[in-house]
Image: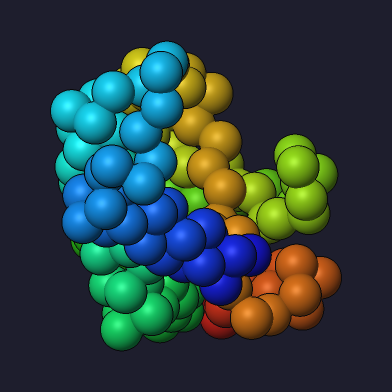
Length: 145
């Protein structure tokens, strides 16, 4: 899925560059040259930032680390450790696709992003299947929790 995202961004950046370099070839009665060139710059700026995020995600992939301190989730722009004492109720949750969910007592009631229940989802871009990850989480909770 991440590869599709990167290819899509790359395609729109390439189209934007083409609009910038050759606006007269894409211009028509309905879309003048200046409009085509401005559209090219907008496409390069918007999808170029998406392409940068894709490259960062390739260089620093998301992961989940289990240790005595807790469950550490690292995403593209940061990481967070959830204490074992605060996490519970690990389960497979089907939203758009199956992912592992858990309850976080430290986050419950905080109203963070409209979530008052404290339910969190592990990232969907992990290599492990949800069932395998669920077993490892339950094992780690029993060992260190």
